[in-house]
Image 1: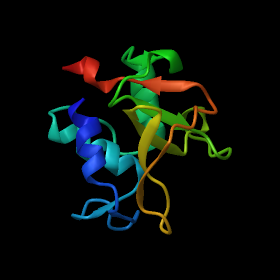
Image 2: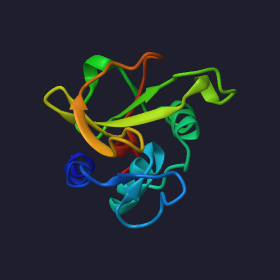
Image 3: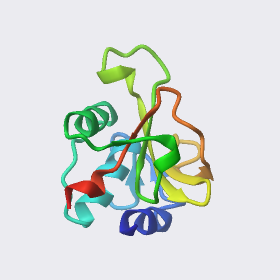
Length: 127
């Protein structure tokens, strides 16, 4: 997937919610939003609304169906958002995912960690 390849080029960039739309800075949801924008797909700005968008547009996939470019949604706390989603990552294949982890780690290529809420999405179905 083009998005998976683009995501790999962002590894090493810095994490910032405040500067999320500046070059070289991302938070988890701006990474997803900006990379998909590069391939012509518009997604909401926040992880929880991205997850809700996957569900309402019939873009859900199962863990076993994951392909490079698919999204992995996580909930780390009760936050009142859709399914309490607070984080999103991009599956890049070979059991790996790229995500803007936190301000200490930045954008990283980590081993795939299954979604703790079982929500996966394939925005590329919109093309």
